[in-house]
Amino acid sequence: MTLQFDPQDELVCIGSHRPLADGGSVLPPIAQASLFRQPDMETLFDGLSREHQVAVYSRGTNPTLSVLEDALARLERGEACKGFASGMGAIAASLTAFLESGDHVLFAGTIYGPTIELAQRLEGYGVSWSRAEATDLDGIAAQLRPETRVLYMESPGSMLFGLLPVADLATMARDRGIITMLDNSVATPLLQKPLELGVDLVLHSCSKYIGGHSDLVGGAVVGSVEHIERIFRKGLLLLGAAMPPLTAWLCLRGLMTLPVRLAKHHADALSLASWLAEHPRVRRVFHPALTNDPLLARQMRGHSGLFSFELDDGFADAIVVADRLRTFGRAVSWGGPESLVMTGHKVDPAEAAPALPASLLRLSVGLEGVATLQEDLGRALG
Image 1 (cartoon, rainbow, N blue to C red):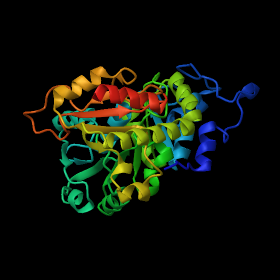
Image 2: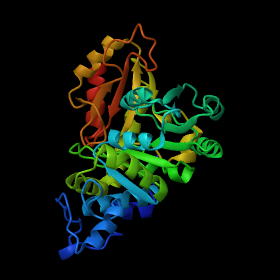
Image 3: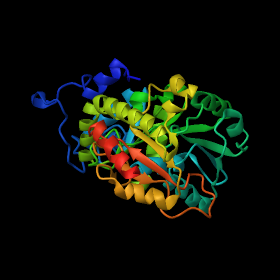
Image 4: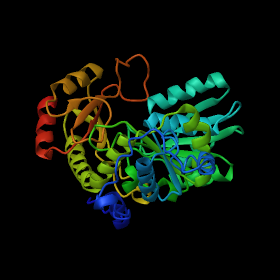
């Protein structure tokens, strides 16, 4: 399965749509400044009224950040984008911008743990939340309440990589006046475009594939001008999680190679997942391309370099296998050039009836040779 990217997306990643910076630089300069002087007070007051668009103070926006936001909005086919200091910064600003006391948020898919911790924190402010165990349209719809304000999704999820019927859920939510948000960090804008499927807001951890080099922490949210301005006013300005200009520049650097990196991540991960599916010590492999899920072809161009597998053994054996790996590093996160392994749990979940298998191991397939990675896995599995 060879990835075919949208040619227009490839041009956006390289920056072909941008005018050249001063001196012909192919990358914009880093505007490493906290504030920007204006020619007169009238211009300053006007800028303050449009702080999400005009560089007045870098908490609001910055010339380097604006270039990145334009690129991400183009890739996601959105009207506007705001960058944040982290993925959680984007999530927190988006949820708090739309949720008030008495509202309910429903989570669908395998949701990133800190997002659930944020929802638990919001309970103290009168916001309720629940998690849909089902992954089908009717099952998720049955969990909605009259006070549901936001439907928050991860598809694919970042541990089991299950897919949700995003277009159907977006239509259903819109008919009920519910805001939809989707974390698109696993797929990236090159493999899935949730806004074209009807989702209202798309969120990213730019620390992952967008940055691509394990040297930055950042986040972003893309949507309509109206929604992004609301997040800016009620979320970013008040919480202050602004993306620094150097981080924005590093994200632009990462975008330039995203298509070629993602193609290798995809091909090598699929090769390793197929090999692991036949290994005698492996019970199950969680990779969308191996499940024949029709949603993969319907709403995605392919999958990235992230997948997981369950051993026939327990939690302790998963720890042993992870510790035996030499090329795969033991670390959180994903999307960089180095291959990584992470367990599904930090402690033995045997007594907790966990949602994730006890012996789950997640792999982030990097840019090393696939034969080297297969040899490493084979040695660790024994």
